[in-house]
Amino acid sequence: MRKKIKGNFKPSITPQDTVKNKKDPGTYERLTFDFSYDRWLKSISIKGFTNLLKNEEEFASAIVQVFKDVIPIIQSNWEIIRHNTKLQFPHCHSLAKDKIILVNKIIEEIYNKQLMDESGNENLNYWQLGVKQSLRLIAIFDHSTNIIYPVFLDHFHQIHPSIKHNDNNINKNTLCAYTKYSG
Image 1: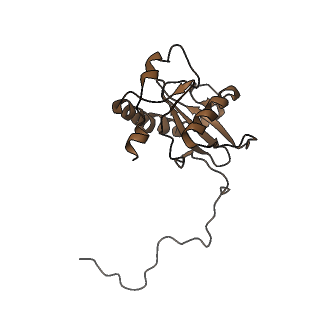
Image 2: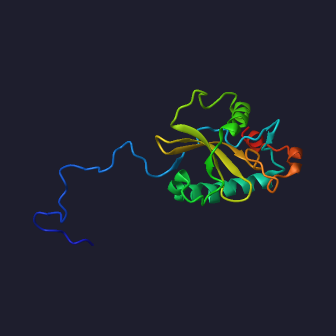
Image 3: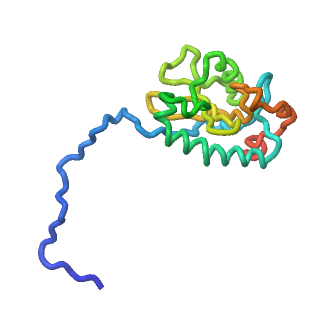
């Protein structure tokens, strides 16, 4: 049973008259991932690119890699990655202009529209994000808000192809788990 306090209770901490925020509300420190582009898991096949998978096991493995490895590592190391000072994360970088044409074709196929205006907003650009193996998350990064918007997965490292990492058997893949399981 609680003991009753007799007399006037005085808190040991005096509240401040005003709350002071030392940071500008327009400043964002922590990188945020925003999944509002809901087709980012959709797989397609067009000339020069496929992200169709062999089976559900390959899809599950990719999803685990994205949420267990890619996103946490990117969030924890974003300032290093963003400024690329020591090239510690060679698979994380903004996409070169010559890759944007292919990325726009892929986005058109997935979303039936372009997501970024061709005239360009200097605060927005496409990024490739990967930490190991061949899986790459292709995303739009908004510099003004420090938000990354995933737009699709490059399961087989085809945006920036490499003889060492690319598999010629991927054209036989047929699974789009997004279409199969989203009803």
